[in-house]
Image (tube, rainbow, N blue to C red; front, side, top):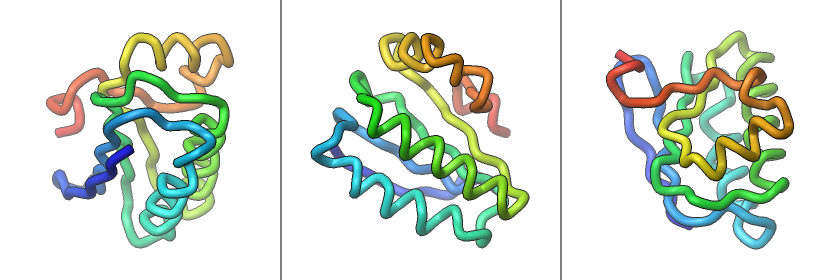
Length: 107
């Protein structure tokens, strides 16, 4: 898994590539917790290049969402691969997260 940070307007974007699973989720958690500390009004996780995510990845995203909410910030997901979106739908988490289909929706 690779993670890259960038700014897009008011949004701090976390671009994730590769698989998110139990073996590498700690890296994602570390980045999520560093940007959801209240210093950013909006955090967006771009998952365009993530084609697999297990329950540990879902847990990390839920924790990021809750932490941003505690700081009155916005947390959203972007460009979710269909397989990953299906997992979120099964857990009804597609209603829990704000999900954008493309970068143009952020601006």
